Length: 262
Length: 330
Image (tube, rainbow over all chains, first blue to last red):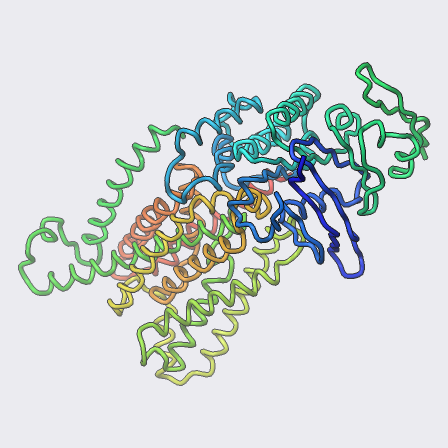
């Protein structure tokens, strides 16, 4: 499978002489489901923002479908790449449906109303994220989980070829967490490429084809979940001793060996 | 509010209010002119001149109120702060300083565009200083921007006072009259220019309404949804500042219209900027026209500047909004 998203030697820092990424490289194949895991502050969100073109690297390139992401127009980029960023708060009183409709912005002319295909995409996204019933509620009056599902729905309404998600399950209950990951898996089977950042290693191990373990802005390990989730690698990345056992479906499950309470 | 009620307000209540406020604006004042006299040819020249003056006044009130409401709505969207408003952000202060500089330097004698032009340039400068001063982590940014606005407004006001203190008698007279602010436009050409800016600005903002909706969710969301945040922000801020600058050049500082009207409009019509800018224009126009009527009739044989009325309503409204925000965040 050809690569849909490629990061070539990315260097980035927020402050001078405090590099977050040094010569970071990454490739995501079309139709793949990739999980980006790593401890707090390892640079996962920064990588996602660079891959989405929101941040510009000091050096290096991000290629989307073989083209430099900076050279694509914002509309072209948004049609190919949907991004779910971390939780946001709306200042203006938009309804859930209005926020999801905003996902169609790249496909619409400035003043014309939504066409039939736009309404269908919005309706489908609302149903898939289980928020159709609350579509007329105000976004800023929702719970964290409902807001998160709304943002994911907006990205789904974009109908992109690839989805980048930054901690999409952090505010979700167990049921919605599993439902979302199941939906992402189903989208992968329909041909979409998915890349998600998460702290939930077991969830990622269960659903992703490939995991990339990040530490201090560089790749510590990459491969299938069973290749990456090993006690030694987890200890190196997170600084804690764990044991790894196999679940019913062969997915790795982590158990902390000892917890020190000071 | 459901769509049926919104439609009743948009297509029934608003046009009715607009007509009533315009006719009241033409009729009320030191001398009462009945609607029949307005429609029929006035019997004497004095009545005719009075109606002509009142038409200019109502048009000025509508233009200034509408422009400030639309500008306030744009600032609130871009800065993601419902308390942002041209006066509170110091932009009206900057514009008034620019207008005063144009009058004192004699530029206004050369061209009609000098006062609104300088008001616009100084409004943009004030906005730039506010944005630079407010820079910080995003969570603080929204709050910092109000504090920076107050500081910039105070600095502009001090500069204006310093300039006034150095003026001779003639210059002092012309600047003082302008500073007092009046909705009776002395220059009809300036009023036409302001109407043009109001209509063109509102249309431009409405054209960018969909982008304005997305930008209010934050720059990252806007980027992800296929918008160039920087370009959209610049278009919205420059248009809002031009509308503010021209309004200040025409009528002096009129505070809080850009705060009260967009807030009420959002409550009534929702947050979709594709129609909200136009609705703000109409609501802002009606609001200031009504305030102007009160300014004429509240005290017998004396006018209260319309800015005083808007400040008396807007001040408590601002405190109420601020308290509501604090309670919400607690």
